[in-house]
Structures are given as C-alpha cells and as structure tokens.
Amino acid sequence: QGTWVPTFRGSGTAGDYDLSGQQGEYVKVGKMVTVWGQFKIDAVNTAGTNTPWILGTPYGVGDIVGNGGVTGTLISTSGSANMCYLSQGGGRNGFYVRQQTNSGAGIYSIANFAAGETFYFYATYPSSEE
Image (cartoon, rainbow, N blue to C red; front, side, top):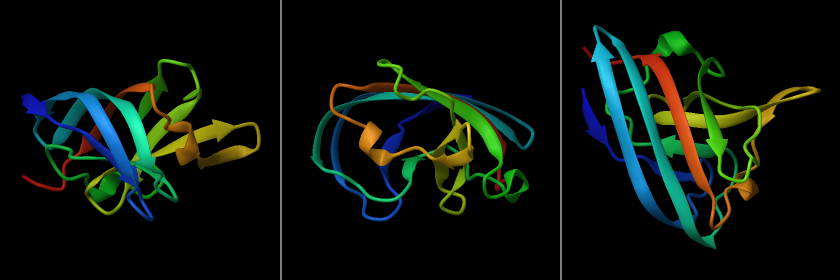
C-alpha cells in the first residue's frame, strides 16, 4: 500500500492543464490493485483531444481487464461526470474515462474536464507487474 500522484491528459494531444490537489492511494493484494484519488483542474491552458486519460497508476494495468472493460468509476463536484466509468486505456499506463448513455457506452467528452472541477475516482484492476 502507498500513495501515488494521478495526472491527466487527452489521449490524442495531451493539452495543458494546471492541476492541484492531486492525490492518490493504493492497496495491492497479490496481483490485484485498488487505487483511489482525486485532482482539481485549476486552468485549461490548451484542451487535450480524444479520450480523457488518467495516468500515473502505481502498477501497470493488466490485460485481463481488456480494452473497454469496466474497472472503476469517476465523479465530479458539479455532477457533470454522471454515469462515468474507467476502462483500461493507453496500453498499461492508466484509465480512459467513458460514459454510459441511453444509446450505449461512449467516450466522456474531454471538454467536460473544465477549470474549477474536482474529480474523484477509484478502480480495481489486475497488475501487469508481479
């Protein structure tokens, strides 16, 4: 168990976000890792593109989750992150933020990651490392 520092970017172009309050904790039992954390976006200097991506996990995300496999949830202070979940994203490097809608699953718009928003999340996943 320990602490980690989550980061945030777009999966296409990264964008330039001023973050604060970045904190995370984790517990690893065998190959299973549970992480939780938060970050606040103070300013969006340049918006990222494509899928929102939370990075910096203390252990790589294993293949068992699969692309699009649900592994956790994300909420925001304004409630804009309604029905959002985290899935394996960017290889083993972190989580993509997706949203369940009436028409099915989709990408949660990176435009929703706005200045003044604080995001809270947790996830459990198999580690790609021993």
